[in-house]
Image 1 (cartoon, rainbow, N blue to C red):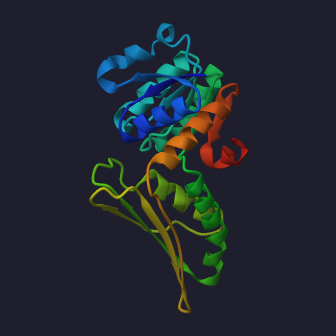
Image 2 (image 1 turned 60 degrees about the horizontal axis):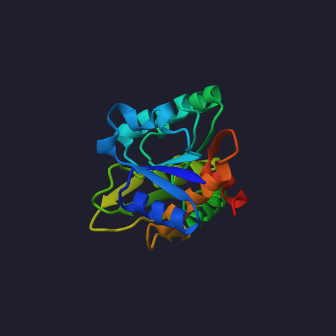
Image 3 (image 1 turned 180 degrees about the horizontal axis):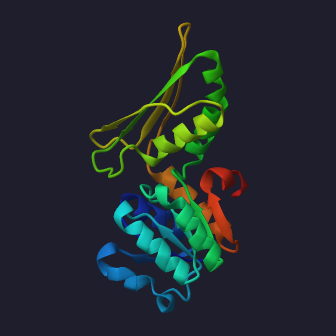
Length: 227
């Protein structure tokens, strides 16, 4: 498969490494070489099967729009744009492309989400929730997309919105804790990332999955279908 990797930071470069390990051809576009999304013009993407974006919130929407115009399927691991989901869904439907996005592409985190959804029923028994997320000082969005998604899945399970504390320190890869407290006890559900490899591997597998599909998908809804 011919993959276009948009962005080549720490996670993006690892996505490229894993994609090559899995036998794919990888082309890279970095921000300074993509003014006005010129590198994503339709004639530049003719040989591309799927584009994978790991850039930043300030440029991801322009990249999404350019890939939609080019009719290319896309995987977006960048966060900080999810308030634009209705607009992006419409773009994907109008362009007839396939699109996978996610607050987090780690399989472990998505299993963590499923457990958090099950804990939503605790609210009916008087438990009060609280989320703490901790990341490295370079992370641009706050709270993290994963923390927002964690709140959302807890609410889907029957809970209500909970406060989120965001901590930025050192080179912490990513820690998330859902704490539920009642007068009787405390429940704590946590996930701690050891490296970026889990995120990168999930993104490559998502690209393999979406290659020949159309439609708009959240990674948490499709990760069990991947191989």
